[in-house]
Image (cartoon, rainbow, N blue to C red; front, top):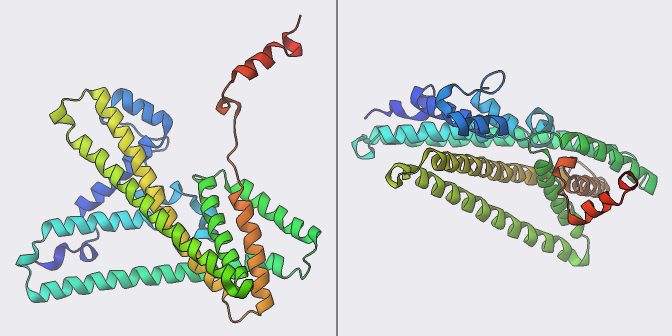
Length: 336
């Protein structure tokens, strides 16, 4: 079969596009509590749509994790584009029989894969370089002070706290700030530790970093396997004779696990990119050793502030304990 089915030569493949669109729309419905409730009541066939209709699939996944407000810190998350390419690739593989390809077609297929990988690498490198410039500018608000007195540190910290309190209200804002903060803190400690005890401090943090990356990767794989298990259960729904209510529950669980899997994958991507960004910022040979040290100090301050961000808690989120009820009954408003 001709190489025409390869995703890079057939990016407008309607089958892959339709699959990607349906996945996006399912997540848009099931990630909205109100729509999810209506979905469980009336089903997807009844024209469920968010207010204003469905958004572009790639735009939805882009906005799901931070959106435009985080672009200057983490760049454009590629999960939407990667999902589209994966579906197109799966379609191409399904339509091609490797054994039926001629040597020339196989060679062209490999060349297309290499080209795609090269494009991804170039896109990532461009993303990293852009973020390096923006992070250096952000850190310069501290490094150019040339004043490390407590009031100066407090002023810089306050600027970052105001920013973090604003950013946390974006989709997955708190989770993203924690991921960014953890990476910043780890890389700052790694750099600053190089000058402590013959560099053993930096080595210690480097080992911790490798352990963290391994743990996060394993956790992401487990989430993906858990999602796969849910899909298998859904596939067997008819065989098991599940009721509509049971099927809806399985579908909702699968959607939630799907969003969790996408988040874990996006988090891995963000942290990987930011590690490269921090390395370039802290190993910048154009900057003096003292400037790089001050960058690390500022990076650690930002990391600490981001990591300490907590979501807002509304009165409805606070459980009423027996002690609270007792306190309420003996309050001035409840006395005779």
